[in-house]
Length: 221
Image (cartoon, rainbow, N blue to C red):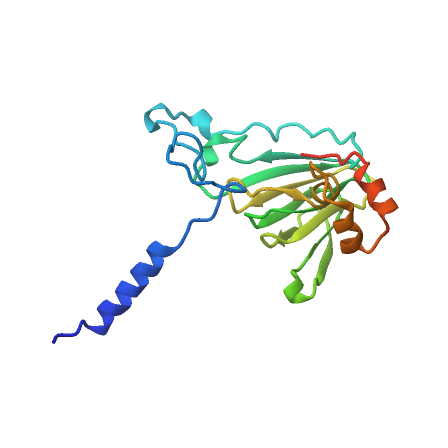
């Protein structure tokens, strides 16, 4: 009986592992359906013969976002829904404008790491690690020209602690990194999460939960 060379066995195992790997999701879920014309894990492609230079241009960062809102900040995303040329390229951006004291509230991007550069003003930023690392809080004050990275999936925020408006640009490692704003998701879900769950989870009384669920949770995107 002949045996395959060990190099061929290693190659076969590596090949099997490669083909067994699932691609990262590009939306919250992708329920299987026999008709592929309905939804796919990403977006269908435009006929390459019809592509023009305009497909690779995004003009949404030319003007400041409106920060007159309860959070004092405005995020202008350049994700694949706004910038079709990003499809399949695994990258996106966002412009973040801050009024003095403006906050981009605690949130997470479930499908992308974020790297942020401050172009104007002073920002207090931070992120919290997972339970595995005891929810350690990392924070820094960023000045013009500083760059900070927020690892994929971790809760993070940016707060303008200066007396003037601030501006930052973020790049993300997915064409559709997703966004979960913590307060909106927990207290503004539709339908609402049971007060029995929230009172026990947050160790507060029902009156506090009712108050929080009655608030208008503004979305600055």
